[in-house]
Length: 342
Image 1 (cartoon, rainbow, N blue to C red):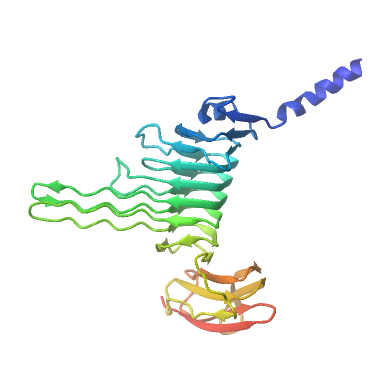
Image 2: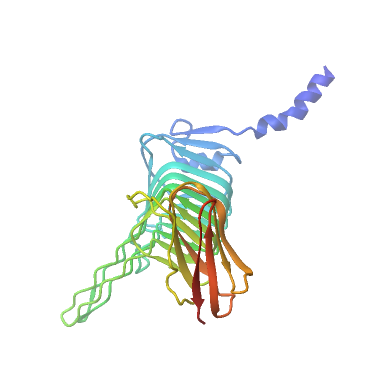
């Protein structure tokens, strides 16, 4: 009898640590209450419907919406904080959710191992800023995975008339704004930048329209990868951000041969883009050498599907000169020269 009691006592923590499932609205009326009672590792299953909530996630949880008719998360008021704020958390999974914010929609800050899958993120025009809000803002985070995520930046505020003159329209929000982060992968996703606001119309002056935002705005990041995604608007990549690899999903032609493009721009300082195509799956190696044959940088060394790729190389730590980049596969090798001028 004493042995049985001792076994129960020893096994009790194991039973308590088993992840639970919390159903919304069956167990809890709203998602926020489900998050508050959830233990680390619990799964919150959200039924179809519209939820007017602002959520803060700071612990390891899984939130899964109905796969066929995804629940819609709407901002409940005009608060200036993000409607879905994942902060100081790790091992968080968000799946099958639609978020529509009046301002900033989703933020991931100071986090590790965050996964968003089949999530639509749409930001709006902010009342406290002239510019539109980014669809997704990621800061000081690592190991972030975005799979089949649609990010839409908010529209910039329109200008207005001031004593005969007029102000300019605000710039549109970026689809994804990424700062001080590493190991971020975006796959099979759609990035749509926000439109700029219209310039104000005064009796003496018409203000200029705001500029459209960026599909991807990167600042001080490393190992950022974009695969099989659609983006129509340009990127902004600062000199401290590292390599970006991409495949365009909306290329509808069939690739029949290997090809290594000349880098652009060339000459460059300090970043340049190298594009190449491969007609079949295989190990792809893209490396940079100096004129003495010393390898300077390995840009890619991994298995790739057939497709059209581009890599942004940041050579800020190198001196001016001529370098050679080489693409090699099991049955193709091609080298080209590039010129770094500082």
